[in-house]
Amino acid sequence: MFAKNIGSIDRMLRIVAGLVLLSLFFIFPDASWRYVTLIGVVPLLTGLLSSCPLYSLFGISTCPVHKA
Image (cartoon, rainbow, N blue to C red; front, side, top):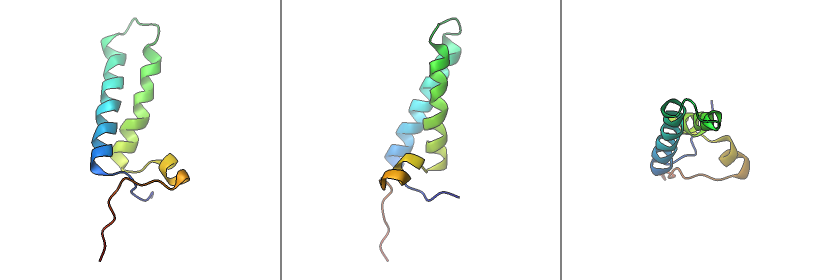
């Protein structure tokens, strides 16, 4: 599907940030800004898939390269 371009530390940070933002959606159900927290889906998905479309676009990779 997509080439992996996210390293392990970057991946874990994205997953944690995504989960934190999504949890705020449920913790503060009456807040006026609560729908902004749904942006947490983006880092969560990119972390779970180990691929970031913006990294691909700019030629960035935090994934270590294994040399033979």
